[in-house]
Length: 194
Image (cartoon, rainbow, N blue to C red; front, side):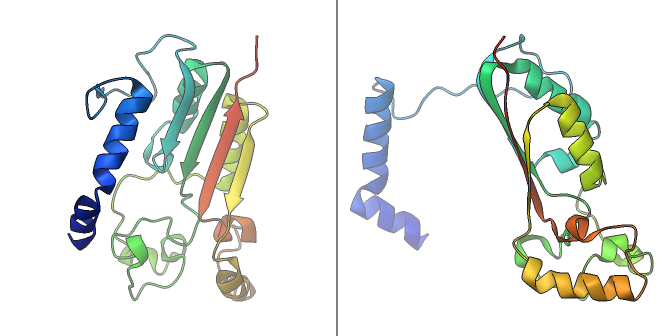
């Protein structure tokens, strides 16, 4: 509330609105936006419709991400770009337990959703496709050959000793350190020119 009031008093929002109108060549304070709802695996757009297509932290919720990625690739124009990011299920907060989202705290141990003795205590906030990084890498590579697949590990220094300790205690052995320490994946792809 205070921030909004300060922006209004200083005229920041009005300056942004004026600049937006100037750049768009319109008198309207905001652009006309049409919102469409559709299935990500069957987009109702012609091939090569967009210069840029993106998805922000949504693909972990998609039941058929391979098909949805193929759709983003299909609707991108040759030379156009696609950007996708998502939070992998195998990351430390991959269960999306509502108690841990946004930095919340809980009595759950790290990777509780991947550890059979703690998994019953986890309360997932939504449907999750539960794919591993290897699954994602394969799916992305098939839908968008030559894409850049970036695994972000901002908490690596704090989490790696714990992950190594769990491995030493014969826990989470089916997941390598890259799986466990990656908390965000970003995919960048430029559709080849014809």
